[in-house]
Image (cartoon, rainbow, N blue to C red; front, side, top):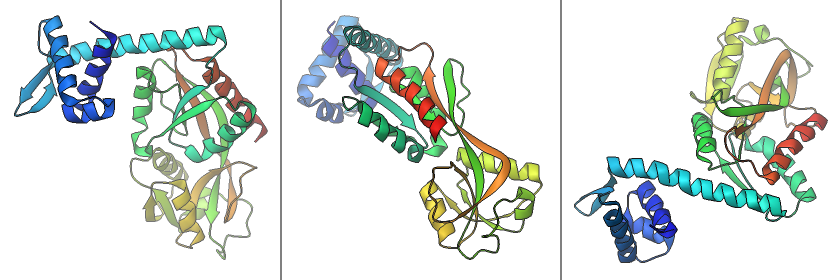
Length: 290
């Protein structure tokens, strides 16, 4: 059994399409098919069900894929540990995030100090926050930066940013001149909100529930930038987390006692490279100053 066979099998198993897998692997489709067939012969059982030129991973293939994933990750982890010991190739960090806007500043500053580091950023849809723990557990990313706690066993989450919560109001709004406000005072306002399933939507609704208000939701969005644009356009108000260094195109009214916490998460039983650990520590220090 060869390492190349395992890598080829892993790709085919994930795509369940021989031609597309061959294209991604940049080899001829007949050669890939023969490689998979030799692997099945060596194992003594089929790994795929084949029907009308279509393939589907069977129960043997699914069981084998689990072990192949573990083995290939262990090899990559070993390479990274050796690289760290040798003091070389420290420049690869993969991060998944559902709060990219909060991460671009520190990444820029970190790379100014460590130009040898290369980042791989995976932007996660806010409604798919649960996928982040899966990515960590599989070793597909080193770290996750999120504004919604993962709360998963085996995942360590370090709070790095406590952003105060504000009410964003459009230019000319009757509340524009206020410095602070309570949520109870916003019950008659038209709100711009995140879509159902967004973790921030759930947090905002919980805050309003505790305040005893049920305002009208006039628009639903996916991204914070869209939310702020619609506030600026005068469609309504919105709840937004902000830091003292943030610039805003609209008036922000402080909501005393309300905060949103952003964390950096890692898998407790996976090796974390020196570069990733350095960035993790850097984020903690960066947000202490911002």
